[in-house]
Image (cartoon, rainbow, N blue to C red; front, side):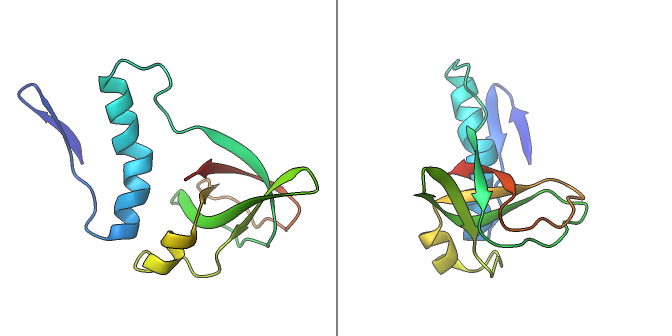
Length: 118
């Protein structure tokens, strides 16, 4: 949740540590940048070549934890197979979030996806 109490900005984050980090990247950091008057408020994104097939997405935008790396001069990303938000080990080894838009169709390895570097 986001709101104001008087002059103060208030941002509520989820209780799950993985969800909290993802929401911090998506909402808290942009809020702080905006409060500082910066123009680059939103998280910077890049494109990367997908290294594994992904299933179709449902009505919710997802941010899949993954491993981003360079090979043959191309930025590549491998999403972790297990994405449960209680898996701290997956979060600890992730260096990127793969953005899956709402209702995204299945996508095959070799296609391009949008990522946020962690």
